[in-house]
Image 1 (cartoon, rainbow, N blue to C red):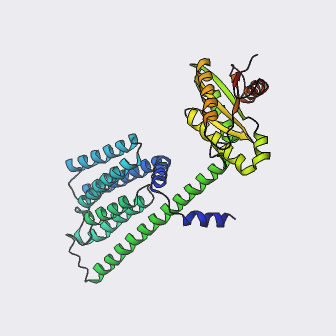
Image 2 (image 1 turned 90 degrees about the vertical axis):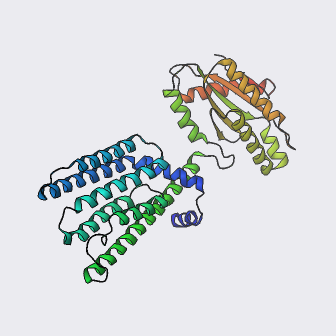
Image 3 (image 1 turned 120 degrees about the vertical axis):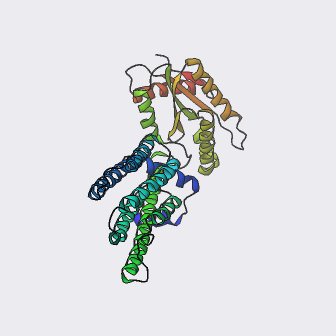
Length: 359
């Protein structure tokens, strides 16, 4: 079953919006790892720079200080960055700086060692880039920048027609293809895992019929607001029930009943868009009104009743609402019981109305 679902997921081409959402999520999750890669790259470059510079008798030069400062500033910018689109350009700047820095350090080595060290520097950059949360174009640009700057045939007296040069050429090509393949496959796996996780979350926390949150999602989100949101104003919980819903099902069938549920869910989404709402089950819905006054809760409840009542349809319905104020120390289940009692009063007072719970 899992393989069947996975195959169906992989068949679907992700929309641009979903790919942007995945890219942002991937960057936020891997940002500490990106910083670690940057700091490790700077450390390796610094150690290599010191070894080559002092063995060559030139010491730690002013240019080394400039490159080190530029790399540290780029890393600091990454630490404060929160957007994946900015990270793509930050990474290209970092790759350009460190590639030029590697090239200049290698210039201090004997000429016959240049190709090997250039290949080593390029492989370090490309392997690191292949696991970073880059877009495809950004990785391709990294590939181009790396080989333009660390070209093992430029100023190295190495010819591609020689045995050594041919070996370097084929290894460079193999390295490029390997890192490109690794990057694309890793990105595909991460994207498919993200889509699978998103589907599982939707199935667990979204009501499939009405496409609004379900009871599990409501208990989690409303419970969190109950526990952590400051009480600058009162909190109210509303229980909503469709009037005479059983008669609609019995008379017109369950397909019409499903349409009624969808219409009421849509009306709740329109009126209560700024608050937590959910379908609890059957024809019952719940709304958590955080940080509102009593008159605001009454106005919203009245507006919702009017919205459902005025909804033009072949099968019009009305709703009844019970409202309960959240008192200090109460649990969500306790407030649900109070709202349900207020809903009972609305039902027996004529329906198509709202009632506040009276202690």
